[in-house]
Length: 290
Image: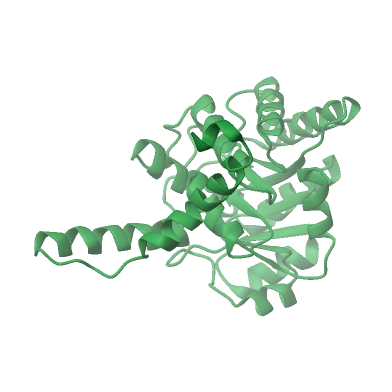
């Protein structure tokens, strides 16, 4: 199966998939090595990793696409790419969807924020009018249909941030229309309590995604609790980046004191990066033995 078909099969399972989010090829590779069935390229984490800047629309379409391509090339599990607002009007959305499909993504997220977008758990968010939001998803679905006609495929993850500015009723209404237009996965960002999360899952069809940010607005429930509520995916966009940053800061501070902090040993490090695989494959070629 291709990446999109693999993701569809996963979403058909009666479970809530824990989805650690990656930010580069190495973090995605580690996610796969630890047995997770899918991952998501976090825009927040990718922006921090690639350009050392906050997720406030500073990374260009080309930079985001390049990051997604590098990640998809490094793993075999389905990757969901962060397509932000689609980088322009409806025709830009179509180009974004096509680009992410060509890069190897199983799905692409398109949202209804006003550009430049902001992290879903930070202040200052605003969304476009309903008509523009619906046009974005309609364009994404149209491009998915074109890709299928040509033998390709990609899933559309439709996100709304309307809860912050207009309340939960508006957010659910937008997501319901996204589903009617043909979105494959629905993401209502930043519900504030379990009651709101329950309403989202009860009133909307298909697969719903929860976004769990440690210290964010949405309750950090267990996977079993999220499944019982009705979620099919639980995304953790910052867990790996926060852990990596903490480890690096700890190591840097220890080195200032001429200490050597405990870390992954060199043998495991080489193995996880792929040195062993490389050497084993290279042994099949006589010229590599010279």
